[in-house]
Image (cartoon, rainbow, N blue to C red; front, side, top):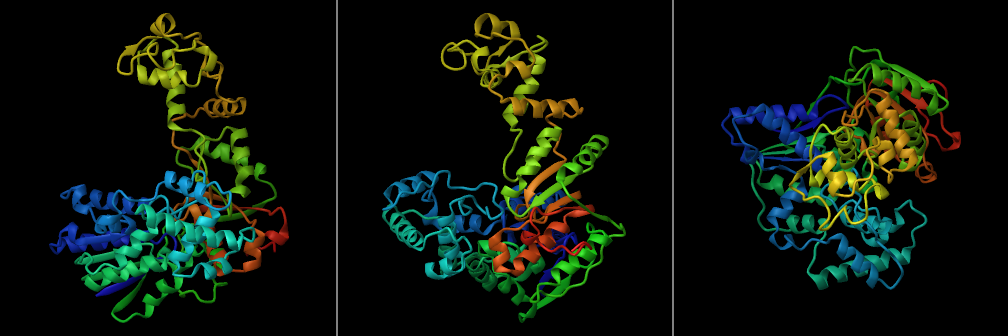
Length: 520
């Protein structure tokens, strides 16, 4: 029996699908005969990890078909191997265009649409050209449907034309080409079991690939939630996903118990999503927790509570969410000012090298330990004039594999200071020094996991936290389009909270999403 699984927030879609894998393995089906397709590499890796944990009798290689469509297409279409467009190719293309345009760092590695890397570009024109492909539209249709009114029609057309010519001349392919070539293959792999998770996020050309796999598959499981379809802007086809509810040969299964969403937040979430007239209606139960909703005028008023809770409990988690990265500037500033260690879909304020350098130096400067030359060089990289010229690299620098004491560095390798890191690391800006000192003064270690996540709503789907702080602000483009996607986006946002939802009053009520929490 083929099944169409509908799983509202927190109802455990992935766990349910892994349980299906368990049942098939119990029947004697080998994991290599099971294809588990997910939208992103992160989701595919998570599913594989859960499978390995539950079935230790099999190796990681046995679950080789727990992957993304792009990964599958890469292996099944030989011509794309070693012939994929790189950032250097986009840079060369930019120099050849008949208008001045610099692609820069083409890839948005933090994008939720980053299925396999360069599919998610920061470049708005390339975004539009890619969307035309994934939506199976002409470039004219894609341009007419876009909401970025700053983009020029002529530039979009020229980029599309020159990109195609460049790829043809160089024999190169982009990630969209992977899918087009795979969907057009005469023969595609056959699996005894095909599972597709987060299927509401798939584009039309991805669905073409899935349809080819369906042709040769045994049992089929399509899973997702149309209420959480928030990547339509990137080409996702929620209509195609919804069509499986009435598709011949498929039985619809509803997951009905949320393990996350408390009662008060559930009521708000349902009021939001009922604004989408085309949704598949589904009922699910909230947790026994009543939950809490509050509205604040300014983010800074809640920051002391954030600090208090994360200092009192290592398990307490927070999210700060907004529609765009630009709307999160205040959140970054307030967290840095308060010495709150956070991570972000936009940036990583505490990169691993920096954290390790501070930790290493704190021990090393006291003369109690030795460090390899590689780690000393990382420390030196933050010291500027506190290390003599010529000792950070080259023949005078410490040997990578040798171990040295503090005195060795002073006597032989140009070290001029034994001050604490905040005085020794001259390359760190004052603002960053104060931020790090704030974290350490709170009793936290730099290596401790972040308990606060700052993110756009689109980058957080699948995540959850005890407490969610949500900005209601939207853009003019979003206000003008009045798309059901806005309802789904804020539905996703509020259902990330396991306990408390805190709503920040908008800067401009004309540009605010109408959250049904009692004030509006």
